[in-house]
Length: 121
Length: 170
Image (cartoon, rainbow over all chains, first blue to last red; front, side):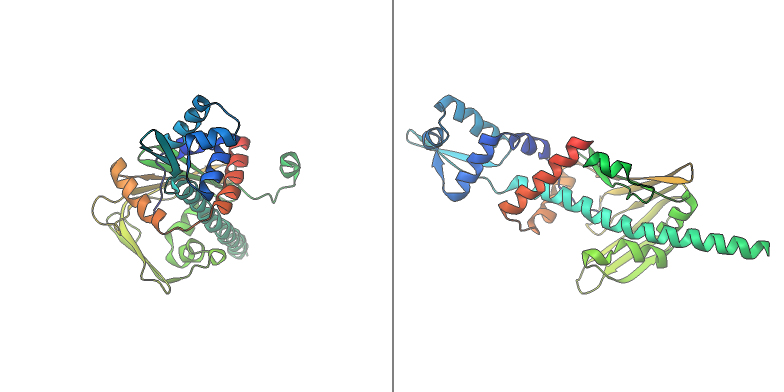
């Protein structure tokens, strides 16, 4: 009765806590880019951007490839999307189940009361 | 907003939490406004179980629900419309406080589910604990689930807001 994915969720979530890194993901969603391009777009030093890309790469959100002297970044296979979405969907599923279970519990409680009354009569 | 929600009277909805305990474990908790014997009954009588386990709000419906709730007894749940079934064996049945079963639809070495029902002041704290045989088994189970999902980045953004908000609260 279970299926879920969790590995790396923390890393992914930490990676997305930063506004620049979210911007980088958005940018890479439109087109692949080199670290130099990204540094320019976000008005950052190369070293600063390398750090951000490193965090995103660690979380599996971005992959990089060095061709000659240029390191190109592209989106990873939406790992965060899979993980975050999965755990939240899992929670929503059980939340929906438990809402209905509340109804069943209320019904059984009412029934118990009625039965108790009958027994006393 | 939170303060207002908390000051709302009695019929407040109880919160469902999902928490990862380790690489192999996941824990779901929820409190119910009723005694443990009643909540336990709703988990162990098939005609009651099927009413909530396949919630209409999620567009789910069960074709069949068979449960032989005793140690060594089997259960089998089949969804309407899809060729999807969940089945396994009960390992422990201790009314009204504890249920343990295997999940065998994925083959040998599937996860083991333990549900405990703890009564306190007329309410019942339910804790559902899932234990996988290994990190690899869990990863494999998750990959299948993840592959079945198609989401856009816009939806992801919304989701993260929700997650961020709920993490901030806890």
